[in-house]
Length: 235
Image (cartoon, rainbow, N blue to C red):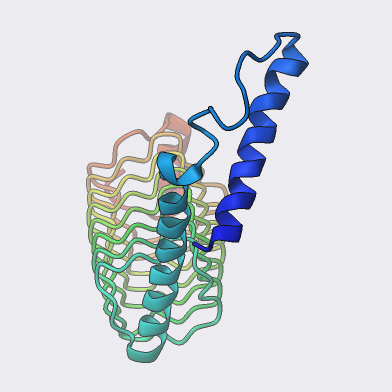
């Protein structure tokens, strides 16, 4: 970091430290130049900013790598914007995509997203047909209108995710955590939910014909009746 930047940061810190006691009515008992906050380098502020810059730069580098090669397993892609990208057959196992924007992204054709972190990610209208997502963390993710036909989500965590209008025909959701998940108008035909946790899940208008609900936990009596009336099995 340049000398000018360090000086500006130091000045800001000194002003803020001086200002706080004045506001509280307490007179400061230090003299400028004697405070150990006067020199940011001593407190590692320069290193902190440089570390932040390196972190952002590293994520940008990983993003460019993914776009050009469709290969980025274990990468750090937190909060990156990948909207509309063509990532068919991508290799993203173990990648951190928490908070990322993947709206309208094509991740079909067997893309590997095993153990990926998609917490609070924007996955609206994403194409995940045939994607491998074993152990994926999709907590609080928005998958409104997404296509997950034949996707494999064994043991995945979809707690409190928004799957309204999502196409899950033939998807494998065995052992998945669907607690609090919104499945309003989702299509679960032929999906396998054996042993899934659906405590607090919303099933309004959900198409469940021929879906496997054997061993599913957390269903209310009303939901069990709904499944029975609409052709699901194993309820």
